[in-house]
Image 1: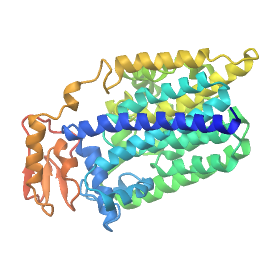
Image 2: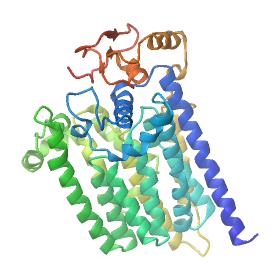
Image 3: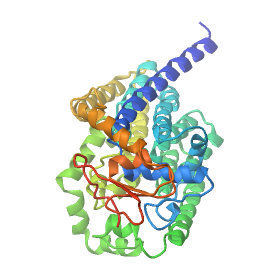
Image 4: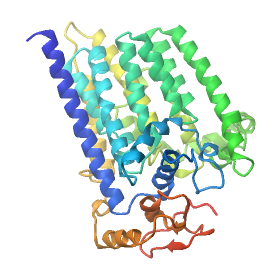
Length: 438
């Protein structure tokens, strides 16, 4: 069999795995939505933003009295606007998220194969990603722009492994577009490029660009659209301060607050589950750990429990960087082994990821999955009938589970915020989300 034919077979196999993963993720996320277990914050919110943008009302939403740009800067959402020209409802976003997460397996496979040097190691790395808690938790909680991160980070890794300099720069810079804190992820990739591949000039360029971009977005752009009513730093790090200067000062003068935050049982457990699915391999590359800390410490220090415990979608970005580092650790061990590279560390990592998936993943068939959340029962069908009865041009206030099904309208509020709504939908079964803003 010639080299070209082997390459086509590898591409076909990797593509088949990517599509299978995408189908798996899409199936469960769609069932969650159809059974009314998706949420106003964030699936309904993001769907309304994209729908409004598709109809010429750029980044408008009614969840707060500001432009969405004042809440989050996520220009990568513009790539999803065409979905609203051809489909209705948030289902297309969930399918797009599944496709993005599945597609990330492709560059990861080819990067791992190039770095590790054997098929077993490459497939074990793909298994660790596809079954990882970061991915499965994100799939089980609505849609988020973090779904773009694995594809872009693993493309960066592939570009570094194959010495495609322009691809690396392009993919690392594209990460900036997923969110206002994308600069941290870009700097993490630059750190890996500098200390694992010797690409110091590229790293300096990326760090400089990321810092400048992050400063413009966070110091000028978002505050310009936000006004004085909101302070996201205070919302996230209120116990440390309400500005970057206050937070930095408190960290230096009151390290006990940081120690208390990082030493609580939930935070320690979050770090344990983040690393255990990778067989703790990232710890074997101390020079690369600053890149991981850069994207892991901000959520761990947040006062919101779901962030500090890396629940929902908050583990996806740290898990992606951690897997990139783990892959480099395995590659380094393979180079130091005998003439024939041994995939032992990669297989160990895959086995660890399977164990963690079985024990902790929120998606079936894991032991932790709540099967009732994926069942379209009589309650869900009755909810469909209620949603179908609401005219498309009416202003609505609804509990969280109803909001994604009604979000594609100019005005919608999450109950108990009512304002000028003509229709109010409540449910004595579904909970009233605490994330509503009066």
